[in-house]
Amino acid sequence: MKKLLYSLTLCLLASAAPVSGSAQLVFGPGPEAPGSALDAIVAVVNDDVITRRELNEGIGLIERQLRQRKVPIPPRPALEHQVLERMILARLQARAAERNGITVDDATLNTAIETLARNNKMTLSQMRQTVEKDGIPYAKFRDDVRREIMGARLRQKLVDSQLQVSEQDVESLQAQLANQGGFGLGAEEAGGGGGASQFHIAHILIALPEGPSPQQIEAARRRAGEMLARLRKGADFQQLAVSESGGPQALEGGDLGWRSLEQLPTVFAPVVPKLRPGQYSEPIRSPSGFHIVKLLEVRGGGEAPARARPTASTNPPATITETRARHILLQASAQLSDDEARRRLEQLSERIRGGEDFETLAKANSDDATSGARGGDLGWVAPGMMVPQFEQAMNALQPNQISTPFKTPFGWHIVQVLERRQARPSPQMERARAREALLRRRSDEEWELLMRRLRNEAYVEIRLDPAASAPATETPATETP
Image (cartoon, rainbow, N blue to C red; front, side, top):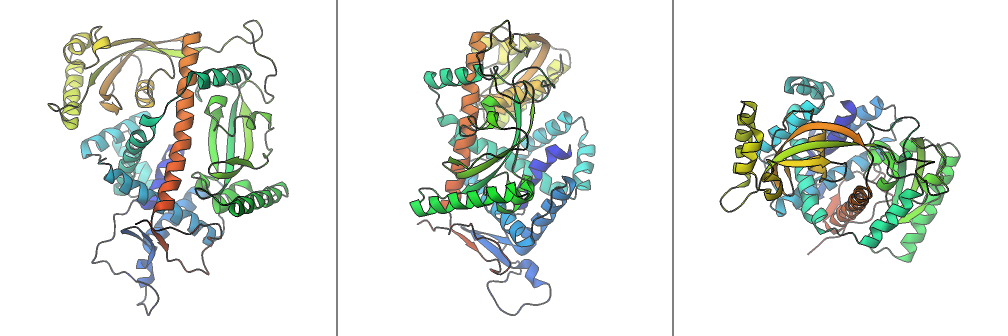
């Protein structure tokens, strides 16, 4: 649970509401009453502000998380700089969602928190106790989950809906995967020896602005080389990432988690399989800057990459878990609002739990004409065939269990799992999974570039004490008209 909550608590750094005009704020230098420094403005972000109190609370949260993960805490100025940057980006993301008309009502928020509790085998009361035990006020936790949902919807609208993958790209990834033993298994399926390799990696990013000059590129290249030399002399990777990385995972020590080959960032894929656990890569150039990647662990197919294309006799394809499921889809329209669609599905779910027939209700109500005619039956569903939101909700269910209403880009759903089985992937399934893997990989890369552009185009004024901050790597903020 703590590991799951860790990613959520990072967004708590920006959870406080904008400061009202009645707050006691200190604008610039001058005599201050005792204790008023806590209310000083430390950053102006377009029309918003971040106060010293908010920054100190955010730093306290991160320090507790770092101690729990046994990561050395970097010097205060470096940590202050990283936490403030995370808060600035979170504010900008929230305002971008608002500008795009993205909101999350209380009913949707309550449903998401209930699902989170159920996925962690907790009651709502138990989840609240766990959150507050970690030092997070429950009201802030709710605000954080709301922002997570808004961020996911913003990403879907601005990035995911615009992505395209060519047939040539799919074939290229399939050939690359074939040389590595096929698709990697999910974290819950990967064992110690079978299946394709999975890689636990971390990285440090020496960030570059958009459209960097040759001088900026060369300076970043030199700094990456200097940082790699420090690591090879014994510097702690996690501490260095927390204090100096420009990547979104900096406060997690640069940890990217377990990735199968198709889940690796595009520029990492040719490099990571050649590393041994504990090794660092040479600096890797990407649109974001220069990366130093560390391979922490390998599991599955072994540490060394396969050199020859596997055959059925020498390396049979791993089995996958297929799920037979059925669903009811309701789409918002001029006659049916988004909230009304969700409420109708809640009513249908209650009727099914009360004994009414799922198949009959799906035929009468589902907006998915193809599956609706079959009583909502989706047949056997393999990993990667459904959009991530649907797959996540479906995978959280036991056979015969019915989900609460959840939203995907297609509308609102309830889904029931009927049964599961182990099967060998078909060629068509492998192609579909390769396409989905490419879409997810490109989504990650485009989202990171979009957030970096959002930061570069914003008006940001940092008001930290220059002597106490460590923004040596910070690029000046530019004001947009």
